[in-house]
Image 1 (cartoon, rainbow, N blue to C red):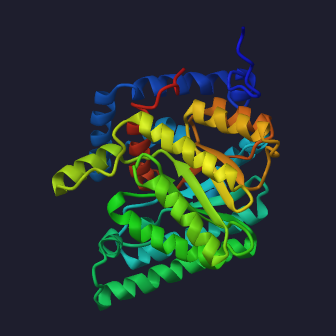
Image 2: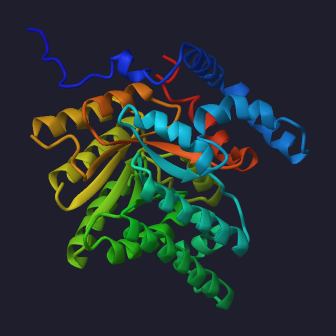
Image 3: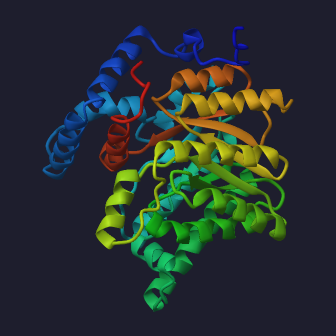
Length: 378
């Protein structure tokens, strides 16, 4: 007896690559082929960082290769053509100002200004309804680490926390005014408790009517499924909507190394099967509480995306339910994004933008990630 056909499929290449020319696909093929070599990526990453440090003229090379594939442009305005092209196929853009690694209060204020500009842009651009925020891009990691450890803050750090809260309110209040969703990224476990605390604080204020503020939950951590359920209880008691972005995670090697160096148990799941199990359980939990939880399935895993899409249809939930989003990174997994959009689901591509030199840390993470993400070149 043959197995029943899936309700949707990611095999339709006409949908997947409709927005790409033959030249675009050929460039992507060779880029991903190079990124499959872990040694080449490691050496290339170090050489790129060194070249920028020595002010060697490599910006044009980076711009025409990895930057062009994974980023929208130097500015929101330069990203407009990519936003429009995605929009033609029903795919939204999730604006992600990719500048990070700064340390001064002035830099944090400039980043906050850029994030507010992204919200204003989303207000007038129908193909953008979400922006991404990295808390460590508007605050020092030292402050977030001290908060996560529960350390007492002196007057200097208290002042930093006050200014961080002001920035968060500035971003979220404008998001509420313009009805633009704000996705807060997950970061390393040793600063995540502080981020969780601050984002839940924003949710309690700004998610009373609509699920505006989203926290990101990394399910490659063995404690995060329980945290998702605990967050839902908190939201129910506080009478606000829980909104979450579910991911597997992006700092696995770094987390294990840090745990070993600091001599504490690794927060990472023992194997991929455990991660997959908790990710799917997290999706199921959100679906079973769909009127009270808004969630984004931010994954490049074909099985998880297909499983969720088919489950939504089987349950009789509208594909464009406002509490359900799918998201993949710009330049990756187009066969998932475009086929979901063609089937009527809400899909947003994470679109980093910013000056080439400033987004190098982001691009290096993408290159390293792609040495272990199967299926991109295929």
